[in-house]
Image (cartoon, rainbow, N blue to C red; front, side, top):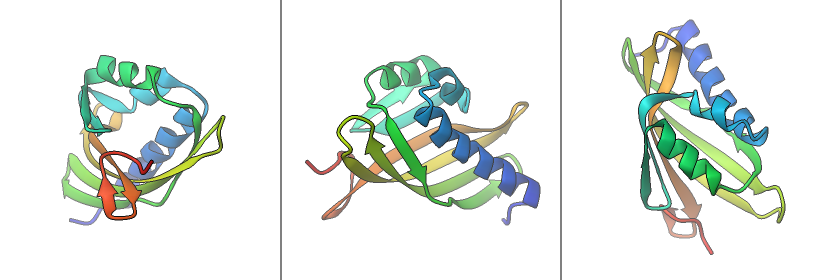
Length: 133
């Protein structure tokens, strides 16, 4: 199902805000991009709900998040899936990590929000729940 221009723009803006709020250390702005019952899968763990997202961010390194253009698939008028890549550059060490994200999005009264996010890292053998060492 193709996205309307309005939905396409709203979803792209949501994912752009995902990166920018992280770059600006705006945890509350970042958490607001998710549904209240969202699940985030990363490093082999699942963080649930907005409190779980806050806990996850309390231990996350700061840095630059460069997101690629997402592939957007509209499932129905209120649900979408996205696939996107991201380059993270650590603010202190300058080390970088490459990742692929797949997301389930839902339309809410506040616009599109992320209901489920899974981050997998690009490593020599393909995709992994953990970055290369």
